[in-house]
Amino acid sequence: MCGILGVVAKTPVNQLLYDGLLLLQHRGQDAAGIVTCERNSFHMQKGSGQVRDVFRTRNMRSLPGNMGIAHCRYPTAGSASNSAESQPFYVNSPFGIVLGHNGNLTNSAALRDEMFRTDLRHINTNSDSEVLLNVLAHELEQASVRLRLDPQTIFTAISNLHRRVRGAYAVVAMIAGYGVLAFRDPYGIRPAVIGIHETPAGPEYMVASESVALDALGFRVLRDIAPGEAVFIDEDGQFFSQQCAQSAALNPCIFEFVYLARPDSFIDGVSVYETRLNMGDALAEKIRRDYAHLNIDVVIPIPDSSRPSAMQLALGLGINYREGFVKNRYIGRTFIMPGQAVRKKSVRQKLNAIGVEFKGKNVLLVDDSIVRGTTSQEIVNMAREAGALNVYFASAAPPVRFPNVYGIDMPTRAELIASQRSEAEVAKEIGADALIYQDLEALEHAVRQVNPKLTRFETSCFDGRYITGDVTSDYLSEVENRRDAGRDGEDDDGAQLDLNLVQAA
Image (cartoon, rainbow, N blue to C red; front, side):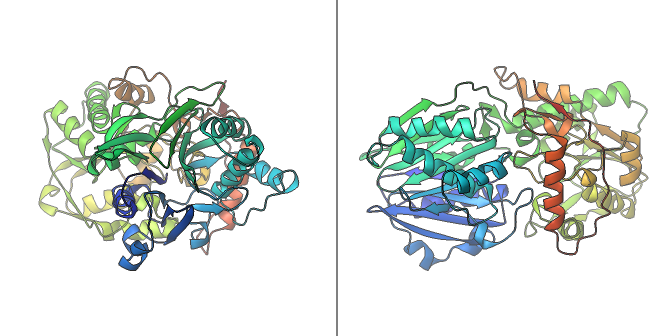
């Protein structure tokens, strides 16, 4: 879950890229970077921290040029939190190329070995994004004639890249002297949308992870980049696109709609806000059907992602909706903070209860999901301390029982509270008097209601079905071992859990 941007404009793009990263800051707070191109030369500024911390006025002045790409980073399985792995990454052979990547490659270890032994390319970091960049550079070299590129040559290189690379990847890249390239994996797991801005000098184009970046910056959404498709905009603003995968089918990550994306975004033709309203409707129906015995006085959301679902749930049940927690917006999103200890400590710094909304009441708390349970447990405790008689908990998502290996930081089975527990056991663990989970079928229906053309989703964290077909228990164990080895003093009981893994056909 990172944020990517690419712009080809008629005027300097540094401010556009900076503003776009601010709009995508929720997708990654670990690092940020911008690269612009002027007269075939790249100008780069990147570093650790949030966007506002990485860029100063002097940095913006040193980013000239009418085209560029940008990235805000969120560390995933086994990756380090350091400036060396901030993106975009750069290679200078055989072409000057910079690349930003959202997702996670599942065969990066094999590709890294191929790069060294066969392609004779050196990988300098542990990032799979650098691996992806070098695969792209190699395939461009192989497809080109006398090291010259045209759109068809670039699309041929992307076709060859798709044959080699496995996993989730939405990518923006820039080739010095040529233009900006964007492409999406054949399953369309991670989002990418393209927009246009008409000017007297000609059209400007922007590619972004979410439509909110286009809307706010004056670009009209053209469409989502299709699974397996590549889009190339040259320096003059000419637009080219081609389907580059032999077999492509849209399987968007359903967790984007649950939590990751902003509610004002559209992804693959779906309003994120509408899906969250539908999730609330489905939860209300389930409570009426299976939990009518609960005497609920008030519905309170865990800000912010769960608000639409909580409001619609309260409306469906005819129960008062109240804001019971005040959020400190200067604390990062706890889910994307690396490290369990940091997440747990930050909960009470981030949220404070409004006692009058809890005292003497039976409260239904609504959250978008329960992943590790650390936040949920602390929030239930806060509700009780504020005087709640009974605390019920509803999740707009199903139980997260399996690791996600496609770009979300939930790789360790031992960290997933629902991995080996029943719903009753999870309720006891977080201290709730009752726990209501969304059904997976209802969640899929909530999204499909908005866009009936979506027939399949990437739902591996709920059902263990990994659509790329190459994720095994051994692979998951290796990811967990790398993650554990990278921890600095965090408590870890080393538990080894069995995983009933179901690979996609």
